[in-house]
Length: 141
Image (cartoon, rainbow, N blue to C red; front, top):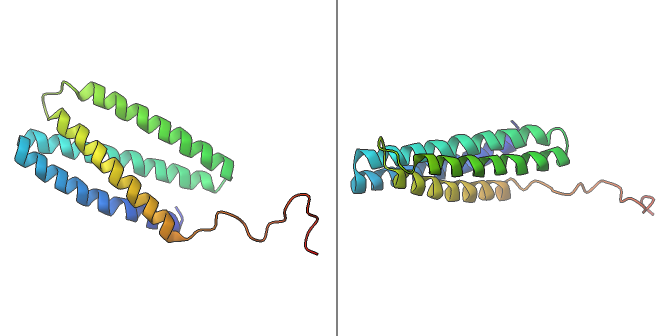
């Protein structure tokens, strides 16, 4: 992982952990231990899925921009499908509160995405190579 990717990861993990702690506390007060457990599982699922995705996209970025984009789209689709499946499987769970899991997953996903966007903006990475030749232009005049 490159230094920029670590900064983006930290920029997403820290606010998500804080938001997750607030959600766990709130669900513990509202639904007891089962609510807190459901919220903690939601936080854990989001943190693991999004970290794996960021690591995969970071690794793919070393190959080519095309591979990076394909990896980003594929990991996003897989995350969405797995989270939807987990929400369906957990809707009748009795060991923890499924609504707390769902709300925690939604809130942590939004916070993670915002933190990741903020991290990318703060890295100030170029998305265009300023020294690249423009095809058909023949070079500098």
